[in-house]
Length: 245
Image (cartoon, rainbow, N blue to C red; front, side):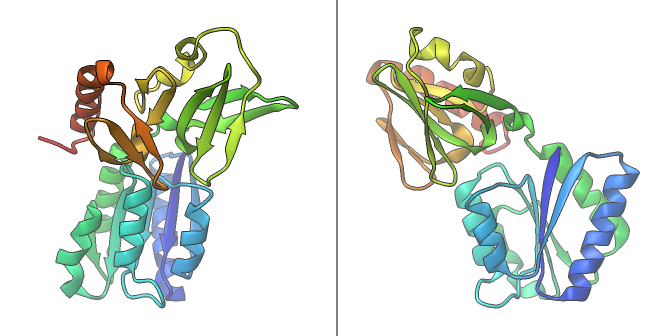
């Protein structure tokens, strides 16, 4: 299921964009969850605990502009698709700091939006929407893979750090860490960069020879002997996502 967020402080524009997007989803038979936000602060609060595949953003909004909003979204998620829809053409160059898929001028016409949405949906990475079940000391937790920032091995248990900052501690297990994480590692978004660490490459902010910096500022080491393989795997991931040429 594709999750879409629309943020616009003008009620009529928000209603129009939502209506057109609903039409597109219905005509293309897409399973989607569409969420409206009338203030950028509300969207910023939402993305602290959840993520969306696609964002449709106005630019001129109170307190936080669509430009700032787009940069924050991009910081948290390198794979999210962003569409700007605005009355102001002069911000187009600045908007591309967030790597939007398109910059639409209002009034946004039906076919123009449909063509952009079709492209955005084709690029949306739904693979991380698989889930992983963690046996904790008192229950079972089902985690959406897109919410995992990294997983760390410690004292025969795994610690999952999520995008909202929560940490989930598994029960102890007997198999080695790679075996335990094999369902996660079968997902192309994930990479084991160290004997004790698996990262979600969607959540990488910076790549260096000795570490990854993940969203939230977490630094995860890269084992020296693994570096060539880790570098190649990460470059392949970026190339597949069209991030490098």
